[in-house]
Amino acid sequence: MFNNRGDDPIRVAMKVVLTVIRAKDLTKPLKPLYGSLRSVQAPHLFFVPPGKDERAVTFTLPFEGSIHFLGTHLHPYGASVELFSVSRNQTVWKGVRTGGPESPMEVYSSAGGYTFSAGETMRIKSVYDNPTKEKVDAMAGLFMLYSRK
Image 1 (cartoon, one colour):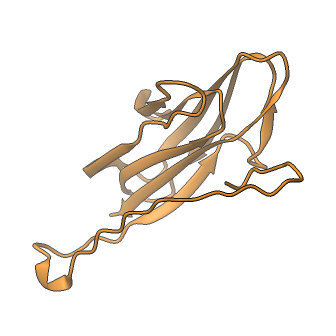
Image 2: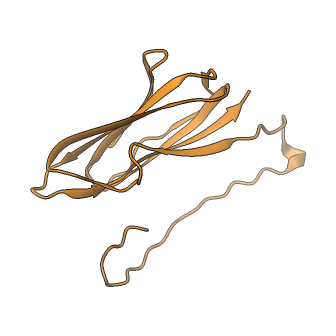
């Protein structure tokens, strides 16, 4: 919706479903969630040449907590986004696009979450596969919802 780089206006829409739980219907107290967007590059928008393109960035988590949701923002020809724990040498989650260049990406969702420690180093890696003969615009962001311990 936000990447209309042409001179002509276009019509866009977004469908939202909102589920409401009344306080009196809670079976246990809600736990606050915090959000973060991490990108493999700053500024977020970049160009990928024809063929395969991989980019990665590492960061350190400053507190203890659990990751409960991971979602991505990829432009067409983005193939995957991976969150990898460098500290543990293990993949936390890898979202893969199944289908064409406009198809949706997988998401990670877990009530229990992926528990992490303060000081843990993570890496986000994106893979693009550009089948065209021209460079294309790209963006590889990872949305994270987490709780703090």
